[in-house]
Structure formats: C-alpha cells, structure tokens
Length: 427
Ligand SMILES: C[S@@+](CC[C@H](N)C(=O)[O-])C[C@H]1O[C@@H](n2cnc3c(N)ncnc32)[C@H](O)[C@@H]1O
Image (cartoon, rainbow, N blue to C red; front, side, top):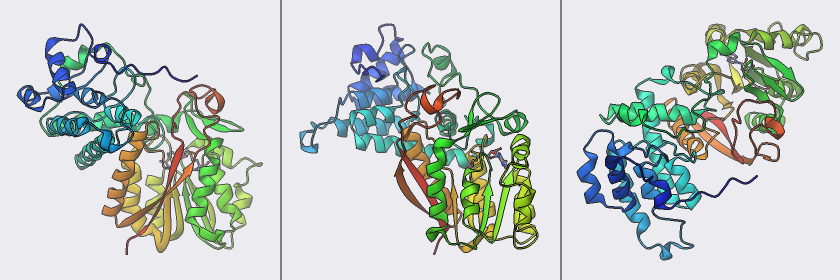
C-alpha cells in the first residue's frame, strides 16, 4: 500500500497549540526571514525547537516553504536561495540535521521528496560535519546501534548531532524534548549491543539468521551483494588468493570465496551458535574443509571476536589479498578501528578490502552522509574508496513485516541501490 501523501501546508505543520516561542521561530523560518530569525536564534536550543504535535523544526519549515521543485531552475522564484540562507543560519546556530518529524522525515528527507537537490546537499553536508565532529569526540561507544554496522544510523546520527551541537554550545533544551507529543517511529526500537548479541540464541532457517529478538543478522536477499563483493575483491575470479573474512553468518560469502580455490582462507566468527552451525557434520566448513588446505592452517575458522583474533594473525605475519568485513551488533567505530588500525598490517599492498555497506541504510540521507564519512576516514587511513553502485531487487523488501521481512523485527534495508565499497591503498 502506498503511504498517504504528506500534507505540507503550514496550518498542518505548525499546530494551533504550538507554544508561542516555538511558533515564532517556525514562522520566521517558513517565511525565510533571516533578520527576524537572527534575533531569536541566540536563545540556546531555538534552532532545533520542534512543534510538540507535528515535530516540525525550523529546518523542516524552511525547506517545506519552497514547495515542490520547479521543472527547471529558471522557473525557480528564488525561494531555494532564500531557504539556503535560512538553513545556513540555522546550522550555524546548532540546528540538528536529522531530527525526524511526525511523518518520520528528516529535513533532508523533505528536501529529497520535494526535489530540492541543493537543499538536500546542505543537509548531507551538515550531517557529515556532525559525524566527523562526533568521531573526533570519540563518542561512539555511548551510542546504540540498531543492528549491523550502521544499519540503524538514523538513531545513531541524532545522538551524534546532539553531541556535535553540544560541542558548539547549542544543546537542545531538555524541556523542549520532554514536551514533545509525537513519537518518531523508530524511537521504541530496542538497540542491539555486541555483548548481548553474542550471548543471545540464534535461529537459522533456509533464508535467514535471526537473533533472539528476531533481528535479521543475515538474510538470503543479500546474496547478490555478497556475489558482487566477491567479484569486486577478486577480479577475474583468480584462484590462489589469500582471503580473510570476518563474520561467517550464513556462510554465503565464504561459500563463494571457497569456490575460488584460494591459497589461504581464514574466517573469524565470534558467536557460539554460528560456530556450532559451522562445525556440524553437514557444514561445508567443518574439520574436513580445514584439513583440505595445501598446508596446515591454510583454511581455518578462527573462533572469537575479531578484536581478539586479528592481533594474533598480525603476530603470525598473515597477509591477505582480499579482506571482507561484515559483523553484526557493532557500531561504525569498530569498522573504522578495523580499517584504520589493522588493514595497513593485514592487507597486501596490491590487495582489496571491502565491507557490507549497511551504514545508514534505513534512510537515504544517512546512507549518503555515511558514504562521505567513510570516504574521509578511509583517506585518513591511507585508503582510496571506489563505490560500485548496483540495483537492489526490492520486490520482497518493500514493506515492514511482509515478503522477506516476514518474521523479522525490523526492516533494516530500505534503499533500491547498494553502494559497494572497494578500498585499496592510496598511491
Ligand atoms: C551479517 S553476518 C555475516 C554474513 C556473511 N557475510 C554471509 O555471507 O553470510 C555477521 C556475522 O558476524 C559475526 N560477528 C559479530 N560480531 C563479531 C565479532 N566481533 N567478531 C567476529 N564475528 C562477529 C556474527 O556472529 C555473524 O555471524
């Protein structure tokens, strides 16, 4: 069923019982009145005030006021330029780029829906700045993460932006938040932590692996992404490569790697239920597989968290041509730590590194923000990233609880394009 169209009219978005001080800032933003806004934005938290009924923020209002984009830029009446000025002012004053309104839209989502690319790009820019600042503050460990690396980035981003805004001396007023009546749709989501996940009981069926809370750890619809990742990491399907895969899951990518007859194939897996599954007699990766390598230890499942196993691999001088990273229940800080601290020692100079790119995949703007953040952090680590974009078959993925999502707690993927990262050493 198609979602009901959003009513973008001012009387709907600024509610009749919105407190006067919030109403003022929303009206000034909607009217693109920069001088008027400047006078009231010096009050802490004003730039990210929200209508308690609708969740409208000044950023939403400034963008929404432009209405749907004109067919051509010439037909634009200058509204977009005005909106840009207002948004600039709001961002300077600590406006939060990814607060969701009662329609579960961030300001960037509204800009995208209305077709205002320039305004959308401003939101992406603000998101990137907030995330980079947050990373500098090393605040990731306090964040909750929905499931896989970045799969719940929307929630994570809100916290990140809070931290960033606070760093600029513009924290939201607590009273503001307490007064809110609307509930963002994902506010009740139970976050997954690595420790809890690793203690939980998992269930395998033919097309998915679920944790005890029915979160999708791995699902068969990702098979095409795994296939593309293998092709990107090992072009021309060359045999004889040295491969490291972190996170066995359903063994989909490992099955594909094994088919390429590698020289070395190491797998790191931490979850006891997955390890039990791997070592079942029917498994392709049991002791028989381990014994089939050309030399002792050439094919091996390393049981344990990668954080503990990888330093040992380094000590043994292991070096790989292809490394893939796809864990669950960990936030982006872990992926970043992996490629910053360990890839330089583990990857051959001509090797390729890839990861499952579910970063922010439940919302387009978060995906775009993370693409840029990862690119910058990879550059810091001496890595170039090339993105290979491909279509995702959304036939069974469109609706929460239906199709592939039947029996799965949360639809962690909503995008019709996958951005596959191929990381190589610079220069
Ligand atoms: C999304 S699945 C991997 C799916 C895999 N790419 C496939 O093709 O089937 C994530 C896996 O990472 C494992 N994992 C989670 N945290 C880990 C950690 N810190 N170290 C090693 N493995 C971990 C999980 O138990 C799970 O098996």
